[in-house]
Amino acid sequence: IIKDNIKQLGIEAKVKTQTAEAWGVDVANGNFDATLRWTNSGATPYDMYQNVMDGALLQPIGKSSQQGNFGRFKSEEATTALQAYANAKDQKTRTEAMNALQKIFVEQAPMIPTAAAPIGAEYSTKNWIGWPTEANPYAPPQ
Image 1 (cartoon, helix red, strand yellow):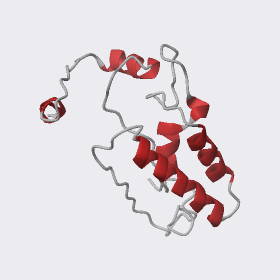
Image 2 (cartoon, helix red, strand yellow):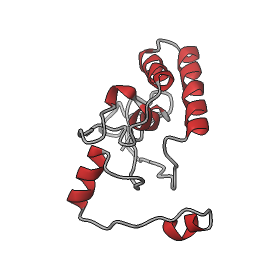
Image 3 (tube, rainbow, N blue to C red):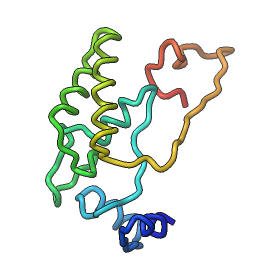
Image 4 (tube, one colour):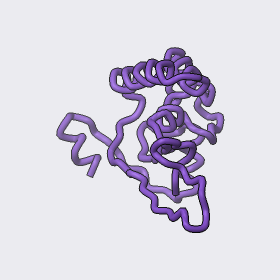
């Protein structure tokens, strides 16, 4: 589907089918021109941005990157904003860092989202308490 759609834009693509194991090795080593893959998810977009743009995860092509930044995106500004968000002690600092990350993501497009995977959860406080909530999203609720 993607190959056929991007052909309309003048892009000729070849689909490489392979085993999941071979694909995983190729993605980790950066041995691809384009690939489909999920990102991390969490209570905020930070998790996705960190998985896609974190310079702390950057490895050269051919060296395995098991934790993320599989597209080998390099931006000191993005890495600095990710660190600022992760270490923020107040909402103003988090908001400023997130605004910088969103701007980088839109302008430099280190990846192109093709689908959303919203995460929901149900829980009961009858026997257990302490679940993540909107007011305290310390972890994905599921």
